[in-house]
Length: 201
Image (cartoon, rainbow, N blue to C red; front, side, top):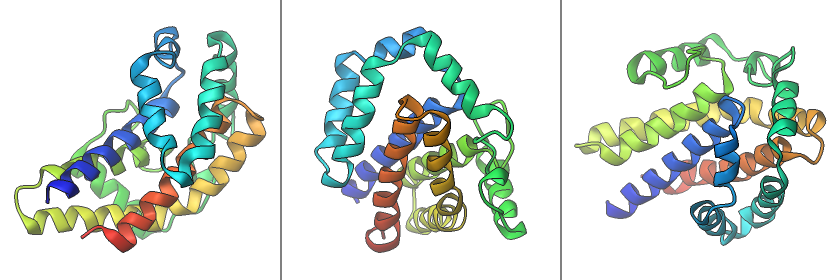
């Protein structure tokens, strides 16, 4: 059980980190953090996992080169109409999937200003919120229910829009910071999907 808690906390940290990367333009202080020890240690830990090594190092390179003014322009390119952060432009969610995300937002809330269930960052944040809730669950029934919600969210919503999101980021920010961040997100998600579907219990 302790291993499950640690893994869930780590997964939550990753999803919340990706949420922060895409939810708003990064500040100068955010960029300065990329050169700090904690960020290097964080990225080093990701790079030790073979499926993440290439994507992590590509992101690290872009993060070290990022300039605030240029990055703000790149973020605007992501959110220009049609915004890549609106999943309805990336895939077609069924009514059942929309209802699922709406229910989760009502149950768990969101730390973002926009509570749109189709917003990329609300869905990423929800994965992190559910993972942390599962880590802190006081009973087995509740923990398993939270795992099932994560599986459903990952297998019915994220899996549909993420490939198009990565492609869109690459097109609008060719070989740039957000393209590298999206590619790293996809690599992490592929590993996480395997964990949820085949390992977690």
